[in-house]
Length: 162
Image (cartoon, rainbow, N blue to C red; front, side, top):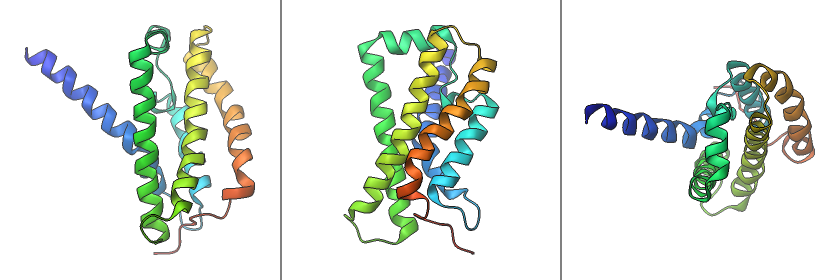
């Protein structure tokens, strides 16, 4: 029973890590770095680490998640919670009034980039790519996706000097 409880705890810990990952990346930005640049940098670091937060999961897990409507729905929920946490962090970072749409819109775009790349990693995994092959392919995919956001978000939420 203790083993099962520990497994449940590890799952909960990962869910909390996943939910807070984009907000944490925002918080770890360097001086002069925009939200987009910081989130891009952290995504590429996660790819370099072959981190589960970037979609590195192994073929069995990827098939299980994508093949189960219930698990796929839970993953969508986790992505939404991650976006919500990023919205709150962006609102606090930019000092806008409660209910302002800019942090919500920026978070939606930034989270969509991460969600798109996460699912791309799952698709590549299911197609038989190894983690090393994913780590080689995902930086180019990331540059393509994040470049789409540059015109709108390159100067949004730039970290000021402390």
